[in-house]
Amino acid sequence: MQIKYFGTDKFEVKTNNTTIILGAEVAIGDFKLPGPGEYEKSGVFIEGISKNGNTIYVINVEEMRLCYLGRISHDLREDEAKEIGAVDILFTPLGEEGSTNLNQSLKIISRIDPRIVIPMLYSDLAAFKKSEGITEDGIDVLKIKKIDLPEDERRNVILNASHSK
Image (cartoon, rainbow, N blue to C red; front, side, top):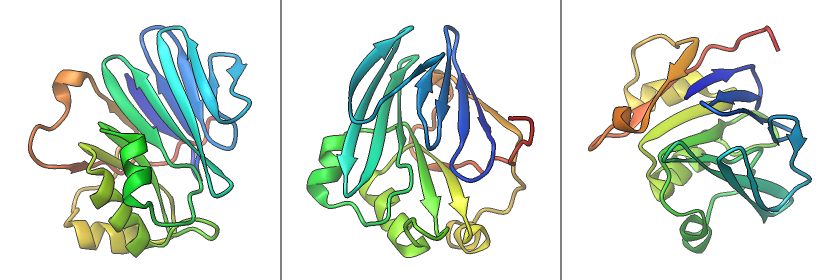
């Protein structure tokens, strides 16, 4: 799987079978998801969970579980985190207007406890990097397989925004 970031809240996730677009519109290939619900296409299983006017997408693909929080603007309660379940890769906002602030985002990350965190909507990126002890620069593409997921420690991945989409 390859993950590219296109700025704000938009990502492209390329799998062996299809391309998933995450953003204001979520799509599997050319099929745009109409909103909350359960969907299956090209070996991808997606559940859209509606929370306070935002849809959280939980994606099962290539034996990994991804969670795209969208423009979530509130802390997750324990029951909401349980509904999301175990997460391998979490896409979370970091303080851009209309989304969670840094402290709320850190609480959500702690509550979900993913193996990899990929920030988006990041007006607070420098503060996030400092709080998480991140010193390396961002990368253009995350290439990952289930075997590459960290076992013990969470990994934070900063993706550089591409401008080709």
